[in-house]
Length: 147
Image 1 (tube, rainbow, N blue to C red):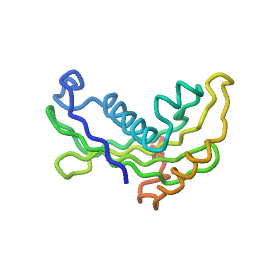
Image 2 (image 1 turned 90 degrees about the vertical axis):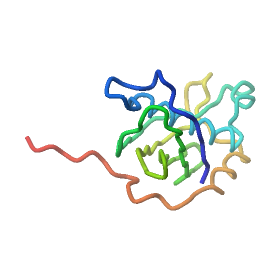
Image 3 (image 1 turned 60 degrees about the vertical axis):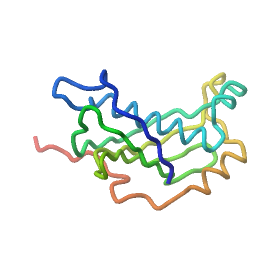
């Protein structure tokens, strides 16, 4: 499992005094960037090829408030990968408590052509070597509200 750390910034605090949901997703995005760097999809790769990951689906669960001044830790695991796709599970932890989760599906996209393209072999190997069992919440959908 990979780990990304960063502090809550004052401008991320909402009118209730907690981390705003939009910035929670931003932090999950930073964790995805850290994974990309780890497997070889770093800035140099992106500049040389024009290819990158594009998130095409995400499911966020907000489980507990994140206070101003908190130190954030995001644990990231790869829970699936194939030639062009990767499925990630991010878990945001503060003071040892799970505060939010995000599950994403991302595609490897050729930015010039605007369509998916296979991962380089080394990247695919790196991603598949990181695959772990999905957490219990992976694959959930939003429950229907009675009409």
